[in-house]
Image 1 (tube, rainbow, N blue to C red):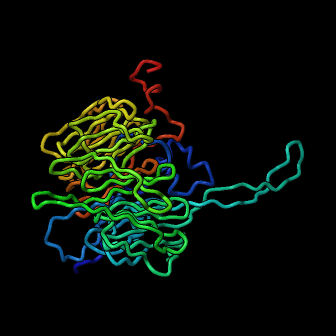
Image 2: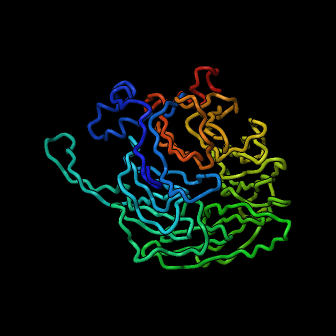
Image 3: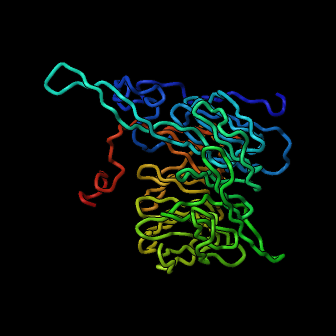
Amino acid sequence: MSAGAVVEPVLTNPVRHAEWSGGGLFGEDPELTPTEVRYGGAFRLPLTDDWSWTLPDEGRWALARMELGAPAVYENLLLAGSSRKSGLFVLDRSDGRLIRTIAMAGTVQAAPLVVMGTEERTRQVPVAGSDQMMERTETVSVLDGFIVADTFGNVVRLDRDLEPVWEAPYEAGGAIYRSPVVSGEMVLVSTARDQVAAVNLADGKWIWSYKRDVARTSMELAILGSPSPVVYEDSILAGFSDGALVGLDSRSGRMLWESRVGDGQFPDIEAEPIVVDGVIVVAAYDGPMVGLDPTTRRVLWTVKDSGAVSSMENASGSIVTADSKGRVRSVVAETGEVEWTWEKKGRLFGPPKRAGGSILVAAVDGTLYALDRYEGSLQWTYRPTDGGRIAGVTSAITVHGRQVLFPTSGGELISLVSESGVVSDQSEEPGYRSDRPLGW
């Protein structure tokens, strides 16, 4: 096979229909698509193999592979990138079949952003107590397109048909590894050069940018980063490689305040700050993890020996993080109380992801684990059907319905699916769990 050839997906499970629908519930709804029937319902363990697709590779790299790009899902489409071939790859979500390749200058390692809008639609509804019909106008959510960024610093906007909207890509001037953010009429991106930029959503023209001057000595190291900007009220929260969390004016990009979080050899802020329960939670790579008052930036609590190597996850007011010491930890955002810690010595984990009552987390040199969201105990470990071990997961895990998607450092995009469950299934919530007393 020639270098760079696209390999068709490997279906590790046969295509199934009624048995995917949770007892036929979804199959009975004519408005649901086959993909919604297949993957709809509540997440449950265990997960089983669905399909895999070999990521395109031009064969020009000698270094070890690292896939940072989480795939994005919209209806029956899957948008993914590869660290070893430029472009955005559009796949069929149900079987991994390549539908289309969107040309990009560089490789796509930031999760594409699905942009939703609204529109008014009129439909005929029956008049109560009669056989007449009347028109009703409703505001519905509709797809407005996609924002895609690559490691060459290019940002493009695509319409719902995946065609370019802007006349030319916006050039941010630095590699982009995290998903863009839309706020009103602006698109916000951060680059690995400690820069945040805002561009116009309509035409992709520059609005403002903020470049942080990070002075490093010859003994200091910087980690590949650039967490996505976070919109909070009228400001933009951004973390930088010198360990500072900065508040920017959303209209001008002017710095309003800064708070020092990280220090030491790896002070970098790799995780997006999370605002929950009246607290800004932010963590540096090597720690600490702190809770700040959003108004005064006063430190409310500190967990000194906990950090975040990548994005954190908000699990109903508890912040789940993976640190540089091989620990996954849950911290109450309001108080800083450590609820639980799960550890595997010698391992480094990627970003955790909540799915139902579980936390999914993968080792960058190993496999995928599911932890109990409330206790941190190990529930399940992924073992590929070929008896091998996946070659590590460094990206965020995508969970959409009962489907779980992630790229591996071995160059595979893997789709797993959970057991059938209905949308109304509440078995993973504390008050409904069968192994807990009522009211727990």
